[in-house]
Image (tube, each protein chain N blue to C red):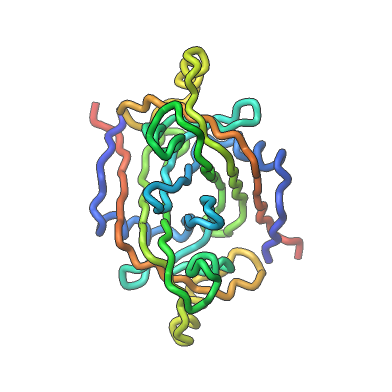
Length: 138
Length: 138
């Protein structure tokens, strides 16, 4: 039998920071969108590098527009036992515009594919939830 | 160097059907939501078992309400090489209400956690996209 336990936000962010791949979730043209990306956790924020910067940070596509609310998910779940964890962070996404920060994140976040990925996006967590799925003792 | 190739919908559904874990993405209270679930591909539809049936299928929470548009994502990406694939299906989610279908899906879809997961939800793909990330020949 599997036991499901809710993680507190510090446990959840620690697990998220221990992996490099996740999925950013946002709404575009009223439709749910999801993209796999890589991330770092930096000072409690999640920073991703993406070519979807405009869609992630402004309904108007303006790079300096107000942030939009996104969800960010990472998990590590065994496909056979279904044991593991899943963490979901919800918060506002903002473009990283400071040149020094941008250079630092570009060095930390290797793009997956050799294509222009000009944007670094910072997600400031408003809500962090997570579940831990463990095997119960017999 | 990594090569990114777009998958056609039949390739993408085949890859999705080869794994059992994915993530369903929807909007609730205007916020993006994501939940890891397990799935089967059945007759070209994605069927998941969840306790979020009401949120996934009706803005009003009515079990027999109109479907809502959801996205469903699965991926298999190597965390070190970043090679692999990701598939996203977008379509309307509908509760499975036929008792025989429901019994069949309940047998096929083992819930992860020992909790009530009364709903089986069928997602009929309107849009299937996928990417394949492969290593280029030197």
